[in-house]
Figure 1 (cartoon, rainbow over the protein chains, first blue to last red):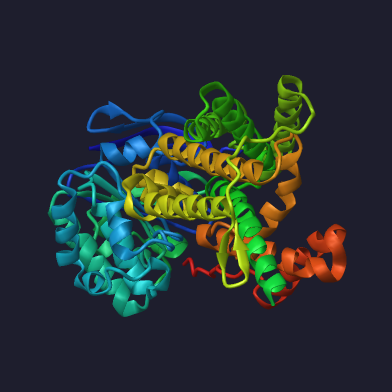
Figure 2 (cartoon, helix red, strand yellow):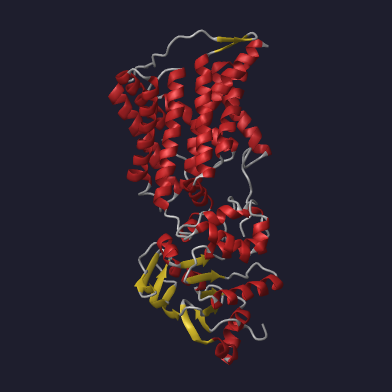
Length: 232
Length: 288
């Protein structure tokens, strides 16, 4: 579904990503973990088309999308939930969904999103800037899901959430993957994320330091000591 | 009392013109993220376009449409030829380029039409008497045009898909891109709207006073002030900001004289910003 080959790149002259190789299949959850500054969010931006300078190759269902602008990648089937500023704060909830481009049968899809996130339906005319952290996260998910993406990139979706809300988010991510969507999950709560994932990759200094089955990484002593936080 | 009411009416008319120019400033700032110093000269271009159209056809309405289209086209061209090339640079680059563009447009108009003042040939009509007030029928028409312009801008921004996309880009340009919103149609629409609104302001100003190459440049500071006073990026705020400035200027005239009335409007601006630093309609948004 999504293939990343020898990906390097960054914002200015210096490479932040140095030779990333990853694959992601339909219905699979791939957690990307690592310390702050490892390049996880930069990898997310490279996949969705927001990294200014990229070398290597990114393909979606066999098509090379490396040089395609972000708006076309979104229409081609890549959804993205950024870590911060992930809703249009000045627009209402329903406008946040209506504004997404590349949606087939938009009205029906909005109904489906409100069925999936009933709390949003109750406040559909409220401005997104007035929502709580949890509601905002739901709206960010709904906005990214409007296009029925083949791949969704989630950049630390539980970062500002309470433990209960984070559990709810992980549950939704698992359900999403069951519908066939491939999930690239960037997470600081690495143990929880790996627990719901099929595979995992641990990044260090712009490279993939460890990669494998999620349960294997959870059991890996070196991964636990260096990157996952023992007992975390 | 009658004198006060007439000054108030005159202030409302000046305020609507300043407000329309402020609306053009705030539209561009909200989406393209810089203060467009060529707004005033786009007003002038619109006024000369209308003057030329009216002279050629004898119709004020047709002339007005020519001016409006000239303003819209000039603004779109300025985006394509200048501001799009600077989109990835600092907003200061675009601001400086817009000052250069303003000089270029003004010099071009001076070369084409000369530096003498020109006037629209409007029918002389008897003022409407209301109580002791004398109201010029043309002023009512100009006010109606300004309000209709504001309503159309509001409808485009809030009730059409392109308007929603414009507000999304204004709110969060990167999120707009990953939501599939292509920047180019949004930017073309924005510049066409800003140019048309500037032109309407210039045409009304030209019809109320005289047309000269410097007329728009003189309006630039009040237009910036209206945009800031209303809350930068807020269209209704720009119009209300313009009205406050226009009314403050006119009401202050008997006390401070014509020369210093502009200073009064900036004192009002300072006082409002001391109380509400984000302007009258500016909002603080929490962005997690």
